[in-house]
Length: 308
Image 1 (cartoon, rainbow, N blue to C red):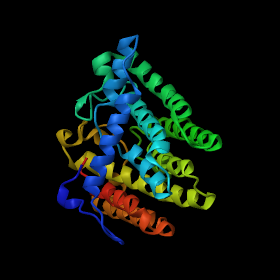
Image 2: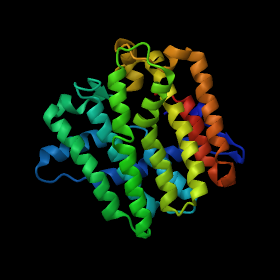
Image 3: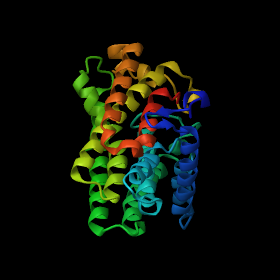
Image 4: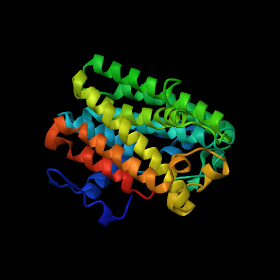
């Protein structure tokens, strides 16, 4: 997280203790993830899946799902399976992203990457197993939600994960490596799909489960698209400004890979300003929800003040 003095967040409706809120929700998510994936036979694959799934992290994606659902009058019970699933999908993406054929990284969340511990073959299969299980988990564990909403969530997660989302963004990211003339439009496409699509699905699916109207879904989509892009801009900045110990992964990889990033196009200060502008635009999308949106507003501001 960030330093406590940075997240005594004040919303338009008064003080909101984001630090306590994130801590409480993170613990809830960690416990749910641990329960969701017990070790079975063959033990090695489950141990590999659990190794990365339970390695830590901010749990921002499942928290966004739970928070949005809560804002619209839903319950933890109805949203928790989907919150678990989005973190499972995110973990799959990290395992595969770190592989030698992709970004080739040795550390993630301060620990050796999956393939460094279990080998490339098991790491690939662990990612495959997690991805399949995420959809199974939503379908079998979601309770007290109309079937058509659950179906809509499953479809939305599929769009966010496949070639229309995360996979498509990763392909363009790989193709752009070493190309210093990558235009801003391509960079935006990469990150709105590789990072932003799943973040958007977390927020929108939380709303869908609670019965969000089409208009509310559109507000949630625009909110999450803006915070997703801001999240990536800050990630690009942190890759330059922070140490590997602070990030929990290799620092300076973008520069070594000769990747075009937002700071390489705009510089660090302008990048920070752009991220802040995106957060303000995101929060404006939440105005129709009034005081109930204070947690989502606080999380949006947290994105630009974090240091890992």
